[in-house]
Image (tube, rainbow over all chains, first blue to last red; front, top):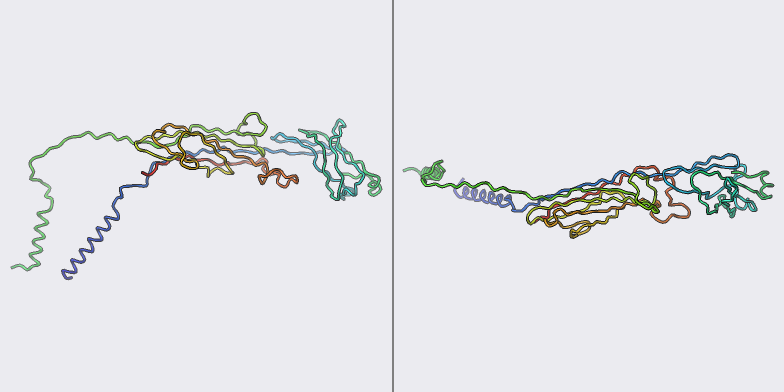
Length: 153
Length: 182
């Protein structure tokens, strides 16, 4: 290797070393900083619930509401069927479907209108806990003739 | 007459010997002074939980209910979390932040503090705020209906038997305090 080549090689090595020192030197600043944290867990929660249990007994039914949540209940819809076939409002024209409480008070009445087989029940009274309801179905003469007896359900 | 290469090698060897540390010194004079090591005290930047309460707010109830009350649609779970900020150190600045990302559902938070806000749920902290208390009130609502809209007459968005007797994990909120880069 000639002297010139050695000189060039030495200069290259010196330059690389100097560049490494410049690049790798401490910058004088740091991204590290103090930090702290606190995690606050929300306790596990549980929902309540309500259940309605209906116990039919002849022409009456005992409806019981149970569960952790307070609430009220009332019948909302009713269906009427004869020999397993649901009757429409047209089928039941002239009939009456009513709910009475144990003391005989008329509490709810179904509107037997239209071609649907499910009828809304009206009545403002809201019941709590357990009550016995008496479902009264007063069929029209046409229904009696058509079905040969009182519809039920 | 030695060659140029031999002379150069000899000169380099002499230079190395003369310039290397010999382990001894010819200096006769000396002096020394003992100084006690100064005590260095580090500052502190931390956040500490001071108290957490959880209650259930029920429409129509006169007072908040205990956290273990079985929830019903329409209830609001209120979590109150208080933390104390410790910030000691010259020229120390930091940021206190409340992270609600770990809280499930749609939490609504209000925070009571004298710290100056620097963003959403972020506040500046300096040594002047050492010992400051920060209280966050986070509320989580149990939706009244499945879609959050008013109850439909056809009951299409009523819960029905869903959401009954289930365990809910609301998650956790996180306070962080971080030193600002200088």
